[in-house]
Image 1 (cartoon, rainbow, N blue to C red):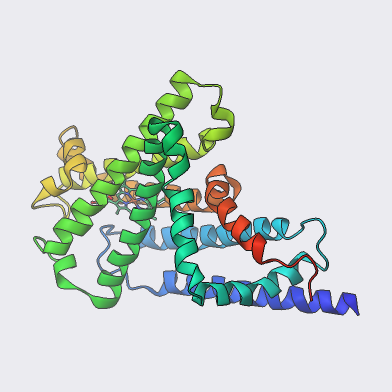
Image 2: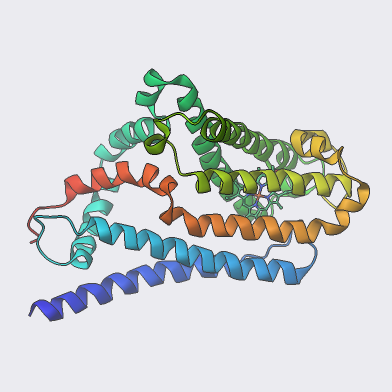
Length: 302
Ligand code: HEM
């Protein structure tokens, strides 16, 4: 019975999908957050609700895109069924030896954009700074969250600790700075030079401006923390070199609004995450993955 099979595929896919989303949401909600800089718990709770909602939108948007790809011509069966049967193949592929080789080709093509380098060094550098900075910030975030909330690693927590200075302060600053430089280059190119080729070559204006607002907001927030000498910002401030420069332009009273600024920065980042599947940024990363996945898809589903 094709209808029954369709319902079974749909149910299995959605149970799997919502199970994964539930686990991620629970991890976000249950982390202890003992070392966050925001003081007011109501702000932290508001942020957690918004970020969980945004993560759900992010995954639903991603699933929607993937199911659209599964509607290819010449394929038999439902998109849900095709995706469901593709999952064990992907798992097998990830565990195979071929994966390492293909991953390095993918990183070179999609992240490092080796082909673009030959055509325009400026566009290549812009892309690498933004995407590389974003990827590095994500990895640093995972590392810092794990060290703080799971390991309670003291050098990452204490003022003057090597990990606090070099990873939490300098490391984030450096990758944020990379993004800021790349985004400024992209903004100047898009809004001042306006080259004709731009329509198809760069992520849409909303993605650039959204990211720029989040990154600038992060540095302003940090400047407010340093100017107001809030805990975690009282010594060795120069490791956060750009935040420190921003703090020099602010009065000490800026620290009184740190919690509000924290929430604004957090909510904007969450909204950015929710927006990703609907933006051109997503397609820049996902298209090369879709091409690889396509090769694994049989034209007739067994
Ligand atoms: C799209 C994701 C995000 C981007 C691109 C981003 C970008 C930045 C940048 C560039 C900075 C300044 C440099 C530094 O990191 O120290 C910053 C600071 C900060 N960000 Fe984000 N951020 C993002 C998400 C978040 C989220 C979800 C939170 C949690 C609420 C957050 C909390 C903070 C805090 C607390 C600081 C300042 C720390 C301080 O006062 O020293 N960020 N962010």
